[in-house]
Image 1 (cartoon, rainbow, N blue to C red):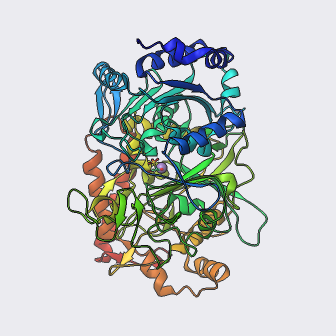
Image 2: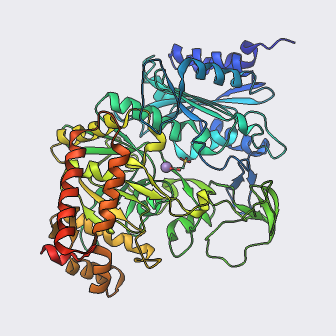
Image 3: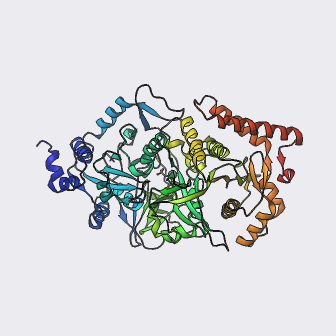
Length: 622
Ligand code: SPV
Ligand code: MN
């Protein structure tokens, strides 16, 4: 029998599509039904019953399994599909275009052909779900509509937890093609319902046509169109307009004893404390991953979280370090665990603070027992270090009341941070907006043994966004500078470092980030003076001492302060040298970047010559 896409799409589905009054949507859906050849299609509107159908489908088709706790399910990605696949993710590049070093590209025509060949028949025997979402609060000038086609009910279910439904919002497009579209197929599945042909995994981004094609994968960073795939399209759009699309958290900071809230955004590479910053006890969370930022009529920067949920790293979530998330993960609610160990319907993960981890169970490798090795002979840990949880932000006690505000929140401060064991101080304030952009551009992060095998390898990751970059870096950084200059009320920028070490040990406790965040908030309101140094404004000992006492009832010693806030001149100069090397051949860098770099280099070198040592207490500047 020949395949009839018309028959499969059917009258009811088509009627739902046509009700949108958008011929582009109908065209895309028809095109990919014809190509992917699903056995069944379900167009899902914002109707809760239809959304519940998707959730049930993920259980029925075995992509998710129920856990003992009500509402909890577990999903497994294939053993080799546990993280974003940078190698097979590429921007489709038209002839004559160039991107920066480090950004994967493939020729647009060739890439389109390759991925369409892979999608041909990819949904045979499966059900295609057609979903409509809104990136950002509905009815907001920030928001972008998104169309998702996928044969994975897990993907579609995750998107229900992570994004706002957008079928009705699509009607407001008035037939325009100003929306993002994502075509995903998990491809052929194995007996565990995991993608079989991961070697044919491809994620191709077509910024010209505002579409992303993703095939032969399930891990959310690869498969969920609305997450990092949409971020790439948004970065392109923002950089051709006048706004910012960023890999940033958004949080409300609430200083103790004061009746005010100050909103911050923050960029940190993966696994460097972004979610845990947004979740600092006593503060409120707007978002933990992606922000769109625009200027309002008063010249403020305003941010919205384009998501409404968290796809968070579960490793090290325990009652001491992440009490709110831990509580959410251990009480009934709609929640998907991924790649954790399950025994008797109970999930276990690394660093959860329990010492009764079972020696057998099911994990990302299938049936697991202590001592099990993979095909390469490596011991398989009981849970993957990138195991995750997916849940709605509204489930959290500390959800900010403005989470769904169509006007977003006014951004008064921006944090940048990486994993840095020996160079930067725990917190300092940029000397200017341009210096703030420089701080973001020079983020470096050390790899952790959990992810890459070798610990402590520094990688440059400008604005923590390099994995998603689809425009030349120089252009992106110039746009940042321009964006801030247009603002009447420029956010203050802060560099954080939660990972400073001395003689192999962290100089701070995990919870100390709360102090840095509160100090930054106070700076915005003029509560604290600061010490001006070439690398930025540093906190004064007295202010931190008082904050530590007030917040943790801890005596913060001057000795600790000197250790943490000394300028490691040699290390700072080494970092500048690395940046010179990395950026030397980068075309169209903003001139401000080089001015600041050269200025810092000169001041730090002069200090080095003057003091003759690599460590300098900040009191030197008083
Ligand atoms: C990150 O790695 O930055 C994440 C998770 O937020 S992923 O969806 O994989 O991008
Ligand atoms: Mn992220």
